[in-house]
Length: 362
Image (cartoon, rainbow, N blue to C red):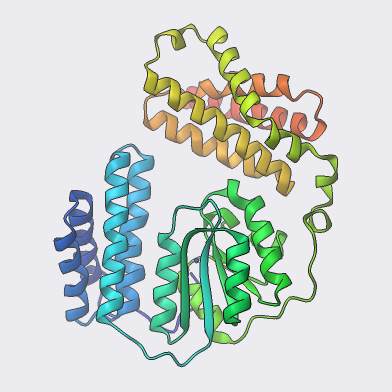
C-alpha cells in the first residue's frame, strides 16, 4: 500500500539508483552488512528517509519479485533478499525517529499472508510522518486483530494482502474490523491494481502503495463504518454455495486432476519427486484461484491468474499448454456447478486462443 505525495526524493534519480544498485547487490548476495551500509549511506548523503524506504528498499524488493518470476534467482535467494530488506527497514527506523504527533494506526497482514514487507514499509512511512503505529506483522488472525482494536482504539486499521486467494479471509477481517467501528484502508496486490476488491469487500479506503496510503491517512480521518454486514449481504451470489463446495473439496479436486493428468500426459511417469510436488502445488493454486473467483464473482481474476501462471511456467521451461488439460479435468469434476463451469469454459477458451496466438507469432 502512486498518487500525490507531500515528500519527494531530495536527489536526482541517478543518485537513488546508486543506492538501489548497491542494496540489490548486497541483498542478492546475502550480505546484510553491505545492505545496511547502502541504506545508511543514502541517509548520510541527505536522501529523504521516506525515499530511502520506498524508492530504494521498495524498488529492490519489487526487483526481487520480478527476478524470481523470470526464474533468474532461486527461491532461496528471494527469501534471503527479502529478509535482508526487512532488516534494513529496521535500520532506517532506528536511525530516523519522529516524535508522534498524529493519530494511532494499526497495520496488519491478512491471516495467511506471509508477504509482510509491504505492510512493514507502510508502518515505517507512517512513523516518519508522525503517526503512532502498531505494526502487527504477517498473518494476523481476525480475532486477535479485533482484540487489539478494542484495546487500543486506533483511528484506522491498514490491512495488507498480496495474494488474491486470501480475499475471502480479508473480507471476514474487514467485516470484523468495521464491526468495532474502526475504518479500514486496504492495500496490496490482492485487492487489485485499481482497488476493486477493497471496495467490493467493504473497506472504507484503498491505496495502491505505501506512499499513497500515508497521503490518504494524512488528509484526515477515514469515514466511520456505517453498518456491519455479513458476506452474503455484500456478495449475494455466494448463496449458491459453489465457493463453499469447491473450497471444501479442494484436496479431492487436486487429486482427481493429478490422476487425470497422469493418464493424459505419459511424460509425468518420468517426473522426479520434486516435479510431482510442484505439479500438485500448481493444481492446488488453480483450484484456489477458481474458488476465489467464485467468491468475488469476478471471472477475470481467474483469467489473470492463468496468464501469470503461464508466464511463470514458460520461464521455467514448462509448456504452458499443460494448463489446458488441467482445466478440462477440473471442468469435468465441477460439471454440476453452473458458475464454475461457465468460468472454466470461458477461461479455457481464452487461454487456448492465447496459446494459439503465441505459437503463430513465434
